[in-house]
Length: 116
Length: 112
Image 1: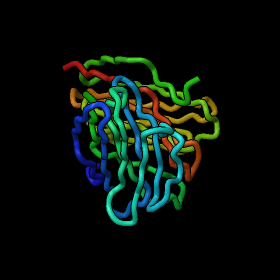
Image 2 (image 1 turned 120 degrees about the horizontal axis):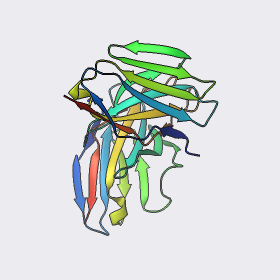
Image 3 (image 1 turned 90 degrees about the vertical axis):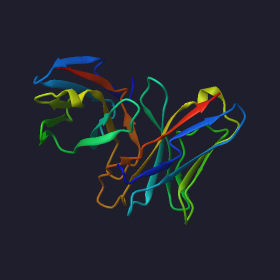
């Protein structure tokens, strides 16, 4: 889990600003997932990406949220025009190729977003 | 019905006792099951994975899976204060599926 790097660890934004969260997967992992954990709630899937492809964004709000995983560089989760309800811990996880079936995902340390 | 449900906590056990955590899931086709430990303010840490019916032991942890009953459990033997955390049950629907469904978690407190 220490191999999945997220930054920043803490992010404070005023309402209406943009938040950009970064995630570098573990070495050798080509699959990235973003999850959100609201206070006192479980983790909820948001989006699954491979390099240059969004595979499944069914858990992501339709507006203001976007994600990318470019050919070079980290995966980015972007939240535009943040609102107080976006305050949460955002976790990135990565896993190796799905060949072989079982997909153990390892989580980064998370970015704790606070909207004031 | 929630996809993954865990027994409500918090669960308080004395040091040295067995902590028993339960999880049920709704998708009968689910294939992969995981237990994560999450300390307060920290990220989830994978502690057990299980794919076949039966028991799987790793140190003081034992995961038990019963697909017919759609039930997976985690036993922590000889509980230590350092085991105090929230334990999350997670399920993949099928091999090659990438999306984990999590339970809300059970908070365990081990009393010294």
